[in-house]
Image 1 (cartoon, rainbow over the protein chains, first blue to last red):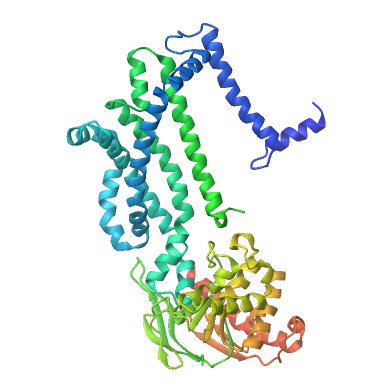
Image 2 (cartoon, rainbow over the protein chains, first blue to last red):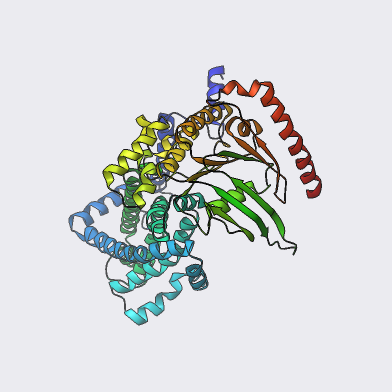
Length: 270
Length: 261
C-alpha cells in the first residue's frame, strides 16, 4: 500500500473529519446498490420464493400498472388526506399548548400528569375503542393519527419552549418589554426553529400510525392497498405500497428541511 | 439622572441542607450620576446577583435599591443591561436588534431607524446592519448588545462581564470602544468583572467585593485622565492600584476556598 493511500485511509477513519462530496455520494450509492443487488441475486438466483419476495421487474410492472389504472394515486391521495388532516389538527393545538406548557408553570402543572400518562399508552390499544365510537371512516383514522402524534408533540414543543435561553427574556425586560411583548416578540420567534424540527420528526411517526390505522380497518389508502394485496398473495403490490410510503416520507422530510432553510435563514448553524 | 443607591441589601438562597446560603450581606453603596463604576470580585461573590437586583430581574431578601430615589421593583428601560452572552435576538438583524427597545415604545419607524443607525455606527457596525447574529463574531455580538442598550436611552447601563467570553485582543479593543462611547455619552455605568486590569482601565471608581457573603470591602477612586490609552496598564500608578486590589482579593479568595473545603 502506498503512503498516499495510507494517509487517505487514515483521514477517512478520523472522527468528524470531512470527506470529499464524491466519496460521500459514492458511499451512499454503494450501500443502496448493494442492497438492490442482494435483492436481485436472491430473487433471480432462485434463493427465495418469488411469490413472497418478487423480483425488481415485477415490482416495477406492478407500480406501472397501478399507476396507469389510477388505483395507486387514489390510495396515495387517500392516505395523504388522512395524514395531513390528522397531523395538521394535532399540530394546531399542540404548538400553542406545548409552548405554554414549557414556559408557564401553571400550564405545565395542569397538563403534565395527563399528558405523561397518555403518552405511554400505545395508540394502537385505542383503535378498537375508536372504531366503536366513530366507526371505520376517515374520522377514525384521523383520530388515530391525532392521538398518536398530539401527546408526543406537546411534550416536544414544551421542551423547545423551555430551552429558550433566559438571557433573551431578561434582555427584553431590561429593554422595557411587558409580559405580553415578551411572549409575542421573544418566546414565539425563539421557538420557531425547534417547532419546525419537531414537526419534521413527528411527521415520520404520523406515517406509522396512519398505516396501522389503515391496516386494521379501512377501505382505501396505502395500508389498505397492502392489506388487500396480502389477501391475494400479491407481494409485488405490497412492495409498491411500501416504496411509495417511503418516497412520500422522503419528500415530506425535504419539504420541512427546505422550509427551515428558506423561512429561517437566521437559524442556520455556523 | 442616573444615581443608584443600594441600601442594606441581603440575598439568601434556601438550600436542601437547611442553612441558607448568604449571597449578599448588608451591602450598601451609592453610585453617583454619570459615574463609570466597576465592581471587581472573585467568582461567586454575588456581583452578578447584585446587578440582577438593580436591573429588577431578581428580588432581594432584604434591603432596597433606588434609581434617583425611586425604589426599584422590576425591570424597566431606564436600567439597560448588557449580558455576557446569548442575549441578541437571533431572528433579528443587527439593525432590528438595536431597534427592539425603541419599537416596544411605539415611536414612529423613521425616528426608530435613525436612532438605531446612529448607535450601530457608533459601535462601528454600519456595514453589518442587515447581518444576523449567527454571522457575527463574539466581539461584534457584544458591540450590538451595547448599541441596543444605548439606543434605548437608559439612565444607567448595567454590564455583567460583557467581555468575559472574548479573547484578550478583542477584549482590549472592546474596552477602548466602550470608553470612547462613555466619554461621549457620559452615562452612569455599573460594570461587573473579575479582571482587575479591566476594572482599573475602565473605572472612575472601583468597588472591591468580598467572597461570599458579598460585601464591599474597598472603594478605590481611579483618577487617570480621559481619554485613557491602552498603555495605561504599564504605568506605576496603575500597577500600584492593581497591587492594592490584588492584595485584598487574594486574601478573599483564600478565605472562600478554605471555607468551601
